[in-house]
Image 1 (cartoon, rainbow, N blue to C red):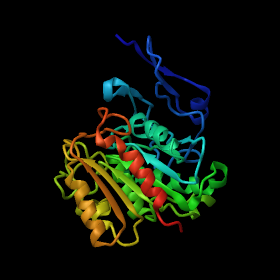
Image 2: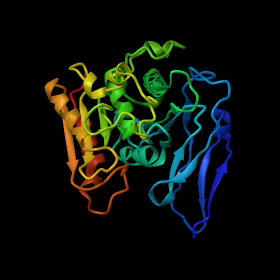
Image 3: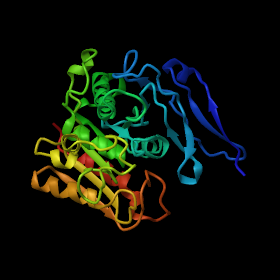
Length: 327
């Protein structure tokens, strides 16, 4: 029996105003997820926009695949973890984990993604964004505020990170895929008041990977009142549903898209990716799609059986993004 303990405290976490988290497992010598990583930065100077009088209390846990995935809740200080490759090629992505907007699956869809993309020369920035239901004002805007701010700060510091600011994309998973889709279509939405010079830079991704992503709360087999929709809250208005509908808002100004989805996904129907694929073709947005027969939901970068075709998505994504025309 594995002895799982949350180890809270650490110099980096204390500096950022949040605890660092690690999983101690007796008899297990494999790497365990920790957050924040050694190199990271907070998004906002002081409190984030719309902060409640009492900030959320960090409540990390280990769940998901074999109980080893680090899930974040109670995110008072949204943070970006920086993962650098040994041989960077200038490309970079903001990786946005999922969790139904109720938690952030930071290891499976962030740290693990960084590991496989770093091996292909891509610098990865993992976003631990605030959760809409934790008391913030204008709950629906909260994740997009953090995503836009992250893209702008990364671009502002491109030289420091050794990346090409014109080859900065995003990749998101499940609800994080919805947020990545919103960056693609809503990168200029005025969701917060600028706080410094970085906010005058573009938050538009140069390319976007949507992995088993939610692309519309209104169509394609998705119930807008379902509990998984932690973004908009109960009984969202038609206007709010339209505003946070990446598929409906997609037009020819959107960046190239990469879609990956398993056809047996029991959480986010594959119709969600098919809808985005159709919309991209109609709007003449460059798009590549990979639909796998098996894989279910939440497979991230590593959680598929050996030999599964879905394990190839990081390599497919890397080849696709490397082949995109340079600006």
